[in-house]
Length: 168
Image (tube, rainbow, N blue to C red; front, side, top):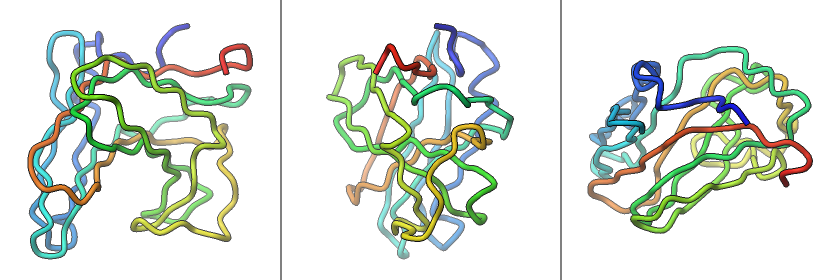
C-alpha cells in the first residue's frame, strides 16, 4: 500500500508547522525535523503559564480518503501518549478529530486507527454535538502531545498509510 505521508520524501518534514501553547501564553516548544528516512516530532512540554501542549500540522490538502476505513501510522516513541489529529471543514476553527496512541519506548510499531476511533474535540474537551468524522472531508493531519508530563519528547514517524476493509 503506498503511503499517504512518507518521510523517505526529503521534503516531507518541511510541510509541517508547529502550533504550540505559546498561542495562549505557554512556553512549550516543538518541531518536525527530518532525519534519514524518518520525520521526528520533537520538543519540550511545559505546564508553565497555563500551557501544556505541543503540536505540528501538515499543510492542508484534499486527501481523498473516502472508501478507506482508517489510517495506520508507523512510529517509534518514547513511551508517552500522543494524538493523531484530523481537521475537516465540518468543525469550526480550532476543533479537530483526535485518536490517542502510545507506542512503547524505543520500538517501531504500526498503530492502526479506524475512523471510529477519532472523537471531535476543542481544547481537550469532547464536542458532544459534532458530526462524526467523514473521511472524504479530511483536509489536514497533525500530531499533538498534551500528557501533562513536562520535559522533552520525541516521536519518530516513518509514514502514514490508509487502511482498507481487508486490513482491519
